[in-house]
Length: 303
Image (cartoon, rainbow, N blue to C red; front, side):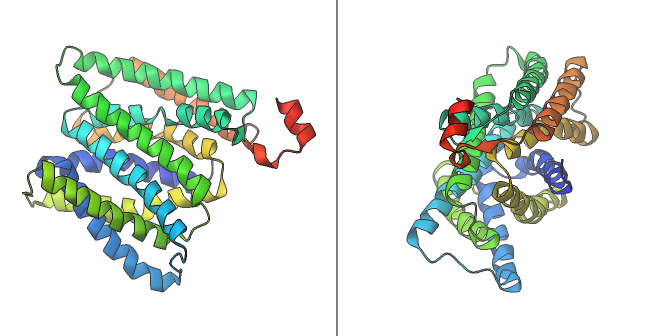
């Protein structure tokens, strides 16, 4: 696992914690809209510094906007509503932790990648670990009538992150990182701002905790972590990038325990260990091979 991937996992894990820290002070779409606006301003200032050009074709803008809506509106909206409705940050991260399995299945089913048996074993172990921790956590909220309101948004977030990653890999992986982020943030600001106007209260309780969480979400994550994600998508297969998300729940639960005293049992420890072993097998096994690069003879053998 590269330093870039490890740094991405650490930063991405803090997003669930920062979201939990900010949501008591603003509704989800209001929070996302403010985050998108701040991130857009920061990225716009960075573009001339790094001399990255904006896309020139309308089709490029369209693809970037679609992946942005999936990655930011569906993903962020889903996880923030799940946390807003009472799902612990660690459990929300665990639902998102199912992404590697979903990504692998879609990638192989659509013929985009070919995985080795060792990688499939790693994906299976990671899934087992995620289910172990998730089932343990769901026992804590079993019987609560709002479980549907908590889990369903998290699943929407899972679908948004998975499809957004695959879409970006397919259509926009070579686009300049900062201009792509600016287009996505402006698009998502309009969408989430409209949603906030239509469905939420527009009041924000400004406090030190909210400002700190918002700054972390808008600058460190929306600029730093998202840039790392785009870079990983560009350099590695979608399945390999997705496998890193197995480690996100482990770090999120650790941060949740340290900051919010979210305690998990033995199943969480065992599940987290399985997830770590799973990602080791995926990242140290044979690299996922794009099917398009196989010769007809090799493709026949792979089948």
